[in-house]
Image 1 (cartoon, rainbow, N blue to C red):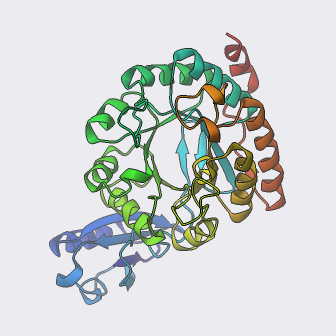
Image 2 (cartoon, rainbow, N blue to C red):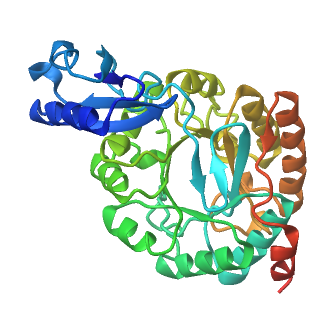
Length: 353
């Protein structure tokens, strides 16, 4: 249930409501909306009712929420969630772009890509070091060696880094290096991993499962939120359908639907959604027009030699053109791309080291 406190409710009044919630076996989560405290009391509410909280001093209203993802819903947090990410903010009017190779293959490959995407306007660097591959014989990633290269790229470019983790053990290693943990489509319902990500308080980019419904995606996000981590980014990456012309079917509908249901930022990954570099820019433009808060783009200096996902990876030149296009679309719908992470003088010299 959602407990709306009165404007000016005292800390003592808020603490009393929190105590009642805990005594009823509920876990309280706090948010501030329009200067007033909102308390989301989640858990098995069979032992509690609105009548338990309504008489308490400082309580203005109590709403019982029927759907199963109260913390992810706009009932709990009506305004868009906006949170900082190492130099810029996610959510709100500005649109962020995360770019980089599917896999970190070598130090030189990563640093070349990082320089190129930073120069073109990327805000964060992605790179896989723990790779979930369909074949056990395919390239599985460099592990901690790749994380070290990512950390070097961050020092060089100023971009925060994003990488996928497949297990709690890998998460513990990654947390020593990365700024954003990615939970991929194949692990969207790995509930122990979701809970562990929630306990870290590190931002999480959560991808929609291959055949997951929108409600299932929001329920997965709820695991992270209920564990205490409010910095969650949802990522649509296409779903599996009967169509084989593209790698997946891009669910553009999901963007406005999610924006109506949840306060969490919504990104789109047009690289995985299409599987073909020829279609990536068009789908990226469509995502921005539909209201996406960010894009996740795969870029490789030599896609034909990539160890994973080469056919869907853009060259640095193609990525630069994409940024120019989506900037124009963003302006047409009253938004803009995230401004530069730092004044050019602070990083342009490093890019040419």
